[in-house]
Length: 309
Image 1: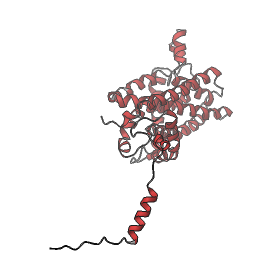
Image 2: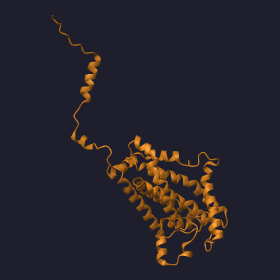
Image 3: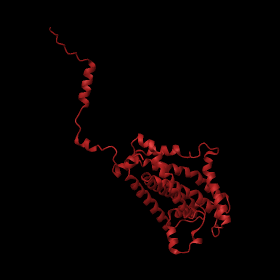
Image 4: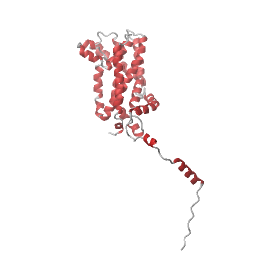
């Protein structure tokens, strides 16, 4: 029984187009292109890491701005609590420490002194307690996208800085309205560089707390106690000179960045004096040291932040 030989099907125009496209698109990968490839999941070099962060600067700003001033959503007063809460805290501290314990003795304009301390120090505390949770809170984003993990601490700190602006404005209004009336002078312009240094301090602390807490989750329960010690040890509602006489202890207290920051804010806002060069040098050293050291400290464990725990 003979079989007929089957003729090959003629090529259509679609076959010709596909063959032409395939022949043009296929090519040999050069050694230079191979060298530019990098394994997925490895930590990039520090310079490239910084460049990747810079490429995402618009996302960082958009994310921070979208989440800023949103901590009081769902409440009746809304964002007014950003101003009311620090004022209520100041009232409590004034009654307990100013009137009952008399820590106000020897402090000029104690009301303004207290308002500045109670309002402007908590952002530093939140940079640790809240910053410690940025990796855990951003876990869904880490699972779904590839990006430098430092985006999360930077966005959080920027959002916190925006949240601090309304309380800062209320502080300036209150010290003008409440006796003995601290009136604006050119020294108030120094609030801008102080606020920038505070942001750098907060960002460095967030980097450090985020890495430590990611590797040791129990720390999120310990940070609030440590920051509370820092709060009471930074002269928020009393002056060191009244309770400490030992010169070495006083010298140690003077290098506390929280105390330095509050003292410089008070000098500019309440007492119309320029902070001395030593205070500026110490605060700049703390801000730059914590920012650079904290950033490198965080970058070193970049890969571990994607590990589920």
